[in-house]
Image (cartoon, rainbow, N blue to C red; front, side, top):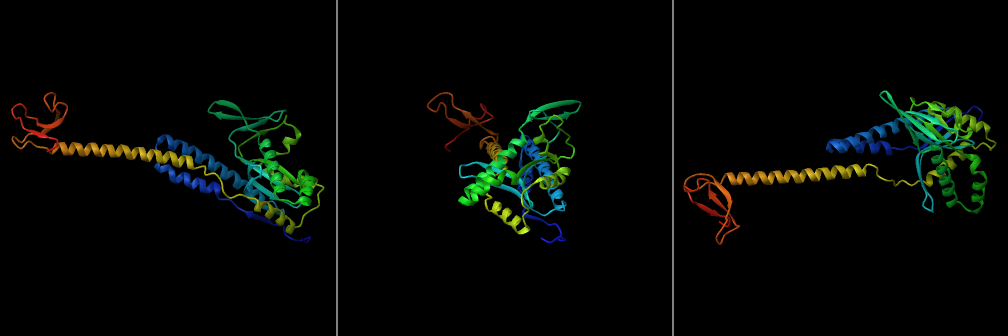
Length: 316
């Protein structure tokens, strides 16, 4: 890597998972009834917000003027069964960043204990609610990545991972919604440095890299690190649109059954209407015998009864 070489951003792995999910939801929308349609529309809104947030992060990374290799949407699983879905893993010359994208609606307060409280405004009313700490989520992602690397490493490499992992791998939470205001005045210092807005991402990364005492990796070494992580990626994932597909199918089956019943009733009515008394030309109607040896049995009798006593047994 020469002194005058141009910084390069390599997107080693892209992801269309969210966009595929959105396409599937939009294809289901016209087939859904009102209740299911409302649920699908909410999921579409959330998915679009997530895509917009991740697009914001990709934009910032591509315009970072830094050497980096980017992995988008990495799924890991340890031999012990622990799983993690990581939005972005960014390999730079000194630090590997795990980035969790949060496109939250409302403003975020972080208290002195590190708890996250979201305030959402509905008209003139404000509602506060606690949310799952993205810091805890980031720590879990680091733990799963470390264990996955150890699962796939030999003895010597394992020792190096245990010795260097905490200094080389950092977790960042990016609040990608530009309208979100973060109040971290009373937040612990270590949390303040991890929760940032999208427009602060690159400067924050540069500060962390500048403070690192690790040796700088070459572009080739950065690619090797990124490829090693990509080799551990699991492509199979849960189909989050499946539950909506099932609801739509249930509606279609229900509607189909109702339609068949309506058609059957209609055919019966048409058939009955066509039954004409051969004696007087009046309409025949379905009746049930009340007495005699045929009590309880149905038959067609003339509607002109008692003037006309024509009977058509069901067997005939």
